[in-house]
Length: 322
Image (cartoon, rainbow, N blue to C red; front, top):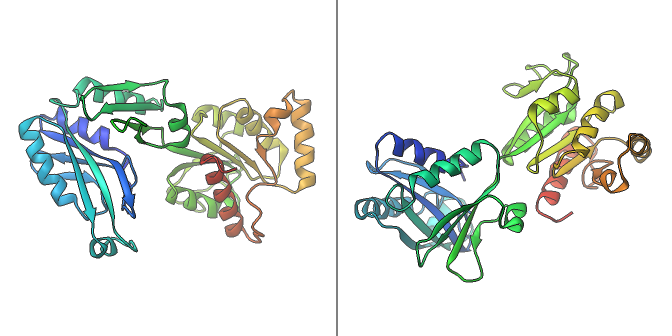
């Protein structure tokens, strides 16, 4: 299934170019639906589209409905059953059902509200878009639905009428230490939806030949993480084994609201790390946020397996399972 995370930006850009446009959002799913709730498809008045709401099963029907909705200037709530045959065509074992909300930009979804949403996303500010499918009331909330924001979960509220679309900043991964584990972890993390950044002042390690196409910072780690910034959608992984490199980034991470901190090393190495952090003035609660030794205990024996263990642990923490 393709990833498409720029629905609001694309819709706003097309609208500003003077083109009729609608934004289609998956609001509910049952069974083996191809796309998760919150997935979006942008449809232009000329039939052009970007994104996906079903992995290809019902896009054509959504486009037809969206074009009619644009002409009428009204929202539409669509429901589709994806057959087993169509599901197999997009790589699923069985079919499912999806509901899709189509909102023409301008006449239904106000352009100023869409612009506010896009601006918030550009600032990496979590925001919730709320729409009541019965009354048509729409609103943006910057300090609401904390549980949904934490779990990155869009969906209907208990009233069955209020749909909340969560727009979290993209996940980021800051890897300190351009070592062999990082070479395996970075592409895995990118597949999982992270924007990775590699930090290592040792240019022999932090080279484009070892990490082709990736963002590499050769600043001292505390300076690098200060440039990047850290927030609740950031994971920090420390892989150098060298306190001179790991500790500055670790201290910055402990003072920030990152969702995951992992540090490579044995139990003995981690005990020394804990002692250094205590000496630096960090509390037991803060220090307890460090996952060390890093990664889930799956018996990993080589850099690739260790990378799998790290990414699995990051996912478990992100989803509230660890």
